[in-house]
Image (tube, rainbow, N blue to C red; front, side, top):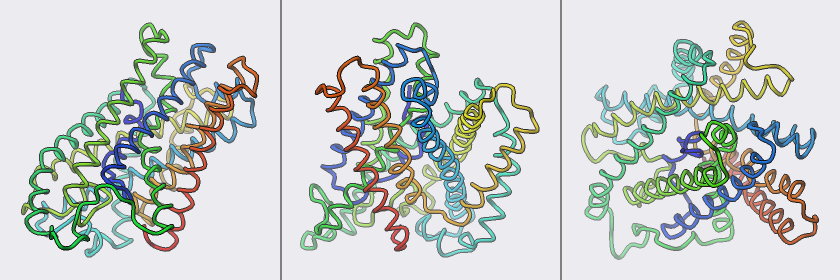
Length: 414
């Protein structure tokens, strides 16, 4: 049911930046509505053609040239998820070692930056060790039933993180009020409604949308999910992704609001990297431990999507791939993602770039283009024009956000 959450569960641990508490739910609602609109278009096309592969559906409707660009962006997105979750595993291990090892740094971030865990040789050894011993063997699995079980781990772990943040939030907020809040110092106040002043900061507000583009997008899993439904009537199909997106919206809102209000004066980008107010914070440590198998399961599932897409695009049958080919393909993929995850470890930067450059085109522009070809209306009809304009606007917002995010990375701000 969690179509967006199933492909990008990591996104819920990310707290929006350059954004106020009032604007957070507005952005979440707009992001959710945009994806529901996109899902409806794809669902209608599935009903017409009964094609459960996004790339094949696009080729049927739009032709080969458009499909090539779609496949490239979707595959970059999928491989990017492998990379992001490999970074996540390393950072989680650092947070766990900080607490269990008795290093007692005040936050996970300080341990990651001020100790041997920040050394490049440690990153390479740990990442490649985990990759060879755990991730590589699991990524050789092609049985969809086993992969579906693995994906379920991520959903329930996400819900546990939600519970942890919700339960701990009042204690963190009281700590903030008692020790950091000063009525005469606006810099210590919670940002309720305003965006940071200045043209550059107001433009950077658009970067918050990158997170929500990334959060909700599950287009590469939508059509297979519809196909596996029992009696996938239009009404049941619509109910599936309406409920899925609405549940995601609620989860993202709770995480964003409670996570932000836990540390409003010293906001962190990822909620489990916030400073500790208890000596050991056992509950959050358990959450970090549970997030590791979640991240591994996401690597496994997205690697399988990447493998199927690659083989299918070359005209082969992914079900007939030999073990030797599978090992070579998996080894090459994981070598490069592991190497990059060791060199550059900024999860926020990866999420922003992938969310902006590799999500908006397949999620928001391809569906209305397919609608234009298949709706049976003149291309100048207001329904066609309005949907194309909406998709184009969302794409423009995404690409502007991506450019700003890239500038931040180059400047060293992320």
